[in-house]
Amino acid sequence: MNVRSGTVEVPAAPITTLPAFAWREVSIVAALAATLFLARIDRYRIGGDELYFLAAGRHPSVSYADQGPLVPLLAALSDHLAPGSTVALRLPALLFTVLAVVLSAVMAREFGGGRLPQTVAALAYATTPMAVMQSAMLSTFALDITLTAVLAWLLIRWVRTRADHLLVAAGCVAAVDFQVKWLIPIICAVLALGVAVFGPREMLRRPAWWLGSAVLAGSAAPILWWQHSNGWPQLAMGAIVRDEQLATAGVLAAPWTMIQVTGAAGLLSLAGIWAGLRAQRFRPYYFLIPMIVIGLGAVVLAGLRPYFVAGAFPGLLAAGAVYLADRGLTRRDAIIGGGFGVLATAICVALVVVLPLPGSALRQPTDDYAQIHSRSVLFGPSGWDDLVTAVATTYDRIPPQQRADLMLVTQNYWQAAALDEFGPAAGLPPVFSPNRGYGYFGVPPDSADTVLYLGVDGPDTALRTRFAQTTLLTRLDDPLGFPGVNRGVAVWLCEGPGQPWSVLWPDAKELRLVDGTSRHGR
Image (cartoon, rainbow, N blue to C red; front, side, top):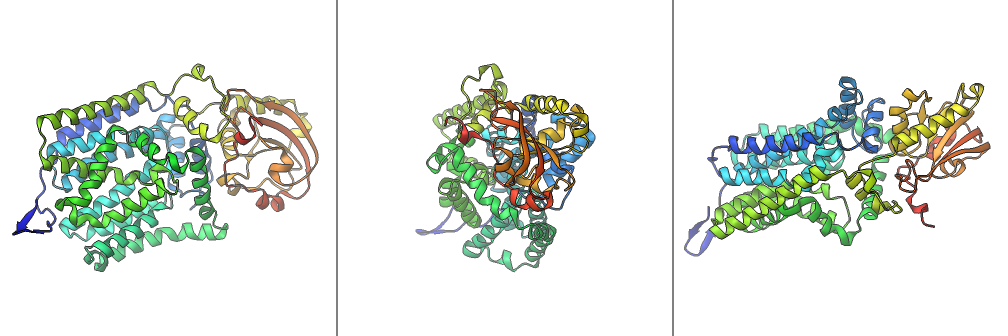
């Protein structure tokens, strides 16, 4: 692909004719990945965030305190079609993961790669630990990763075809992604910066670019209005997410975290970064450099979560596969590459087959926030049954006349979501929580003079008000339990709040997850 005139290297132009798409090979990889991920899709108990998505879906809104409306809508749809099915709930995550596998091959083809690099790119993404995580549970990042990659692919394809409908499509994809989370406007701005610096600047002069941008802006209007009306909680969430990630894995651990999410395929993504900077074939796509550099910098230097840059994985893996194929593989190179492919596949299969570990294998208590993520990955969420049983048993002991207008109030949103999902079957009353997005779902009526409060802190501390009378009814504290679910939790009967609920609620709202781990071991 390099053209030389004397000793001066002339930049390569975008490819005009693409090789055939490796339908057979890529279909086999995608089908095997889908089968593998589907086989374990319901092995993990439903997660706290998944319960929250279901609860949010029962409170439809154009925006939420911590996310857009799309994932709660998908959760509501699954709950309508197949109530209680974790398979139906997680199918969107699995489908978006498989789409990312296929997209890796499509991007390799867009870079001019033939059947082998297309297949390698698809297999590489399918065997990353990130793909295993992406497909395991419904999450915002499961959708965002793939939508970001689709956006990048549309712009890459425009460079070759100059088909302006691709720019409009890119704006539509960004608009959909904005309904998932707020990261995409930043990505679009960084991509625009890359185009302005590296070209092709013609892209920014096309009416289709501005039409696509208008679609994104229009889709943002209802969300921005909701955020404005509710004090912009989403802006505060950025710092909270960063603090939670740093508590899970500090800045110094970020490189190791990146290795954990890319696995053996991380070497191929490094080859993709090298190719993007050095190979003439990729020079027309230099506008992607700021997106990758700033994303990696945010993860490694600022401590943001690894999936903030995972949308670049399909493109990087595709570039690495095409670059290595361009160089020509010796027999030794093929053996080494095959070995890494086998290793990546073995890691992927092992993660799928082995995890989650049985609860009987849990030996150490979870005393620190940094342990929550690893515990969730290794053993899955737990404690919901204990939580609901403890609250239901306590509720049944309260005299019937006192239960007439009783409401449940929880300190964190996982507790509220679990009681919202499983509580009605146990005869429990409506539940409220001032934590994270739950604080915006509704306020207990001012007529609720008595509430059953559940939390790791006392009600006066958590709800920032004094009650005329508080009575500790029971404690739920399994030494090996999940913090904030069935460990370190107490149930209180609270009577006579010091202020009406409509007055105290705004001050009681708390966006960070209160799990109680900081209180253990003191």
